[in-house]
Image (cartoon, rainbow, N blue to C red; front, side, top):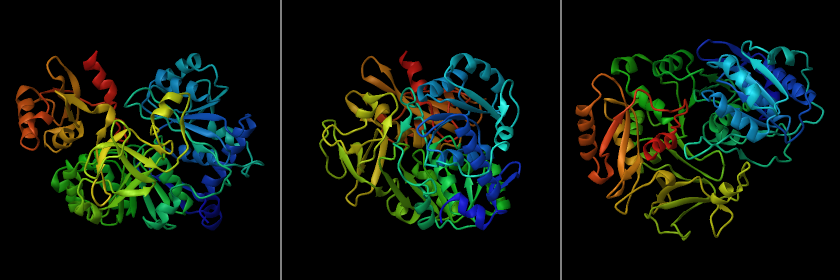
Length: 512
């Protein structure tokens, strides 16, 4: 069996969740009971199959309990990024038609933002607080305790409706049609976790990225459906990650490249102090990983890195293990679902080695909620069954995919296509750089010029000398036309805990 309810019966006292920071634990039996009570409450409040509710929360056990309630009620759960302000959260709530809002009391300024939401979201019928008290809201934990810990009379399989990150415009809900599968069907990632990554009952899985993203949530639910324990991080910190691995000895984990970069920048004695040998699989996804970073991680952790390229739209995916990657450095692998087609601007397929828009032929069904034009824009103009995440890349002669960048961020300078990711990857490896992004800004002669914005490790020396040093560093590794002409320094780039950068908003400031 591959479902939470099975393991609640087979190993009721085994931990389903361990919080990495506090050590708080939730057993499989307690998680199952909480999921059933939550489902009962959602039905009691009048939500029926196909309705939506929103969860605005950081990483905590309640998030997973509510997600499991969603999975058995046929509802759409709309996760709201924890760092959103009230206006951003209201947009998701209103756009999705969410009838219930559940708010984490631990969010910064939660009480103040809640007061704004009462005015901004007239369609919300009920509100609840989790992990603490908020004015005017009932505690979710208390309300669910009044419900029976039994499966509802009309269970059906629900799913998350995750909004796109908004890095290329206003976020849109990625809505997949509900299916007729039984509510206790295996989660989508369960076969992958069981067969490729060797998930077994009683083993531990690190979940360190925000659960409001589709990948971390899907993998956490899949792990629990296979009887494994989710070692859940409230927030990623590089040394805390190494401390937790050394303490709990987990076998698997999911990471994003910015986590690798931050851990690699720890002093060598700090990295050497912690035993990470228990890890057998380190999955990474969500953003491109610089080649130098991945080489360094394989040298440190061994050939245990497993990369997945895909997206919330589920139109297709690729995978690649460390041994393959060392033969094809920079590749994100070969197709694992759906065949890949690289097409030019006219929609015609291009030969191996040529760069173009990446399409997957998987026949995946999804829509961007309330945006038919955006939905149509993700489809191939001649082949409706082909869909794209909006990325650019090429296939080599062996069918391995290499990403260039997002199509929306390609720079055209003097008629030459420049992909910012190349310069970003170089800048990120400089010891003085904590984070960096590259994009095009207006240029009277060339149309666009290459601009970098850098978050330095140490703010004090930031200025013309460091700017010159970083530009020279780029030019030592790339053609000069690909390198930034100028660099601005900021104390913090607008990146969320899953490594997603609000690049469009940053770029737009320069175009204004």
